[in-house]
Amino acid sequence: MADKEGLKVAKDYSVDVPFANQGSFHVKGANNLDWGMKKRLSNIFDPKTGNTVMFAFDHGYFMGSTAGLERLDLVIPKLMSHVDVLMGTRGALRSCVPPECGKAIALRVTSGSSMLNDDLSHEVNAVDLEDAVRMNADCMAVQTFIGADGQLSSIDNLSQMINAGLRHSIPTMGVVAVGKQMERTDRFFKLATRILAEMGANIIKTYYCEKFEEVVAGCPVPLVVAGGKKLPENEALTLAYKAISGGARGLDMGRNIFQSEHPVEMAEAIRKVVHEGFNDKEAYEFYQDAIHG
Ligand code: 5RP
Image (cartoon, rainbow, N blue to C red; front, top):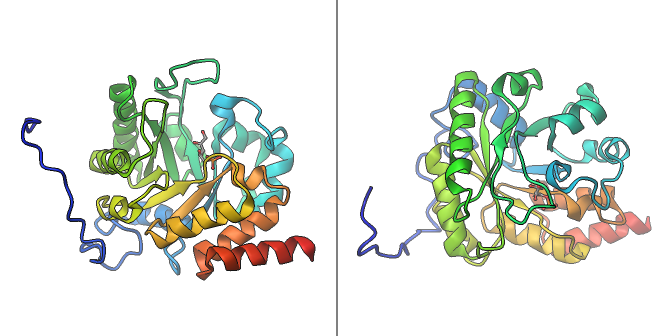
């Protein structure tokens, strides 16, 4: 391990220079992976646009029931035809999602937190690889806590799932958590996303921040941006537009879809940004036209 003395702050990200090892495959950093990995990543990232709209409803794994997700059995079937990927727990998927859904699955495999804890940074790998195979998961989502007390155990969780996933060609998505003691700065996200990618994660879920394009350039695998807390729809679409413009290869939105008054129209407006090149204003106009008929 290099010593920390004399560390020079990274600054030249050559953000205008395309990823050099893209090769012929549309997913960043996956060019050297095997057929099965590429097939699953292609289920997630549209080969035509290279992007994805993930619908996240895994909040219950630590929040229990949350506004907009009181009835998984009613919410998910209504939305699944409007998104590319379903991100959920095995409990939600098996109990509330028809297996004939025809959607990619981002399977939440870690757990151990609850809203009753102060320190959410200690989780375990609750789902084993065999069940991810049974679920035909297209990636396994592992929560990581860089800079928190649970850093070592969460990196171990990530590494164990990457090791297992490689044995069965199932990609792993490293999820960057932002706890109280973590700062929503480019400095933090550059560190956290790069650590997860260096551990071998094939996709990183993170948050949008200033200098986001540098976070993207410094990470050799695709970034998907979480929506975060519910925003007014126009602001959420601006977040989506900034993320995609900054180089994210998708959005993983939960609350900004299922807590919207018009979740279907909101999901479709996000698709316009992610897959059809709409800017935020155009997408918001689409949303308003869709809800007013
Ligand atoms: C919840 C999660 C969600 O997958 C992620 O935060 C995206 O959901 P939202 O857009 O509501 O933040 O990790 O535990």
